[in-house]
Image: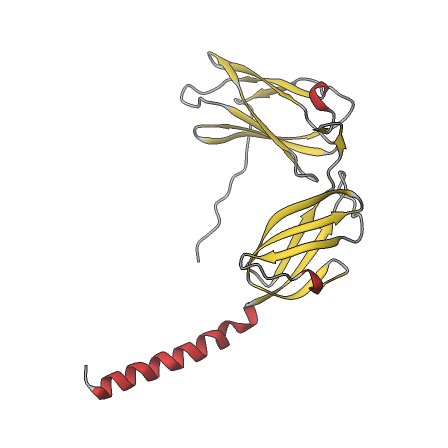
Length: 216
């Protein structure tokens, strides 16, 4: 490449390096909101942010006022939130859009287990299992808390049974049944006095709605 060609190449590189941050600068920083919800979805008020630390180790907790922080650089953060004396909520937060909402929940501890321990049981049956779907698993996921638990369905032919012990705390949950083809059944459960009535899942009558984000 000639000297003139090199000069032009360096000039184009300098222009692109200057214009790229300017073009996307308005999207480099986010406003982060933290919402503190109880087991039933009720907002619980102020959160004390004990840590909001980037992967590089830089701390941003001082930016939070009334559960909101402005000018948080895009990145991945470790959040530790003090929830009015309950166990601190710790989670990883992706900040990659201008407005970020983070929902945190209290943890309740009874003895050395979370929730009601082994007496709090969800059990059930699964019917009409497809021939090529095994292994079948069920997962219980908290809607307003971070609790989740998995178990494998013990099958015999086209039917099976499952048992989940140690469920808690009080709250609302989604029970998800999966097989080799994906999600086979989803249903909402709300805790009451232990144990829950047995859950009957008939895959011949189940319907799930699944979507794939569009690519632009």
